[in-house]
Structures are given as structure tokens and as C-alpha cells.
Amino acid sequence: MNALITYNFGDYLQGHARESLQHAAGRWGCEYVEVTKQIPCRDGIALHPWWQRIVLYEEVVDGYERVITVDGDILIRDDCQSLFDLVPVEHAGIAKFMQPGIAKKCCSAELRTANRYAIELGLKIPPVTSLVNCGLVVSSPKTFLPIVRELVAAGKFVGWTTHGNFDQAIMSTLLYNHGLPEVSLIPWEYHARRAAHRPPKMNAYVYHFSSTEKKPYHYYLNKCQWRTQ
Image 1 (tube, rainbow, N blue to C red):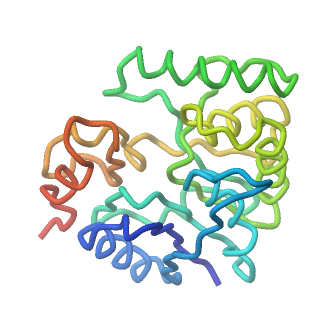
Image 2 (tube, rainbow, N blue to C red; image 1 turned 120 degrees about the vertical axis):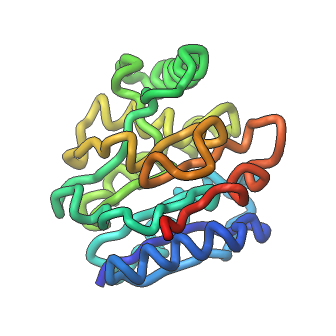
């Protein structure tokens, strides 16, 4: 059985987004799983929600053959083909951080974060072209667990710091250095970031809304039309 999994900490998920995710799961023949359980701290340190989803991954994917994990600020258009079909079974599917509509300064900030962790972890610094965004990941748990366990180990090493986009910066660094598992790049149309700057009538299959805009992400998300009819 496959699953589409999202994390809803503190009632973060908007009904509009939930509808689109549930609709996608139904079309793709997989279970819809909404995780509300939280792990507030590790080693006496408060965990940011980004770290919580990494720590929870192994538990929530147990029993599934393949999973799609998505952030709560994502909309999936109702004619989007199954993301499982885009990625070979033994691969992880993930989109690059760099894509149309992403400002160069955003890439520079992400690279600085990756540089910091590469140095702290004693690894090679990834080039900007190797940076990924882990707001949407297609994976087979049995092959993806090694990278998740490395992420958890890295969290212990860096003290569960909440500096920047740490989870994807570390993931980019680990994937660049170790290449586990095999990675298939998802076209940006299936994970269009900075969606607040894109038309309300979706011109990509998946919109990922930024939480760093002048207005809350749901202001933009709720104006979007994920249904094509």
C-alpha cells in the first residue's frame, strides 16, 4: 500500500489544502495520512516542526511500500498525474531548489546554510545546482530510511539548531556526498515553489506556498483554484 502523508502540527493545515491532498490520494489509489503527533524535544532541546517530521518519518511510513510526504502549505491540481509514476520504485523523487521564479538571492541564502552544515559535518560543500527542496518527496521507505537516519544523526551533531532551512540544507549535503538513495529529479511543475507569485489559476501541477511572504501563506493558498472545472 502507498500513502500520501502530510504533517499538521498545531492545526497548521488549511481545509483548502486538505481537500486537494485528499483528492490526489483518492485519484492515485493511496491512503491519505495526516500526522498530528508531535515530539516536542530531543536531548532536552525544543524541536522545530521541520525536525519533528524528520524524527517521525520512520514511524509514520511503517507498513507502506511507497510514500509521498508533503508540507501542509501545498496544493495539488486536480489533473495532476500520480507522482508515484514520475519516480522509479527504488529511487527518491525530489525537486531542485533552483527553478523558474526563484530569486538568485534565495538560492544564495540556501547555499550559505548548506555550506555551514557541510563544514560542521566535515563533508564537501554542495554546488547550488545540487540543492533540493524537501517540501515534497516521493520515496520508498526501505531505500530512503538510511538518508533519514543520517539526517537524525546530523540533528544530534548540530544540536537540533533551527538555523535556516536546515533539513533540506542537510539533505542536499548528504545526497551530494553519499548519493543514497538514487535520486530522480522531479520537474519543477510538480513542485512549484514561491507559489504566491504565480497565477491563482494554477499554471503548474503542484504549488508550494512560502511562509515567509508579507502575508500568511494561507492568504495566497485560499485564493488559488486547484480544481480545473
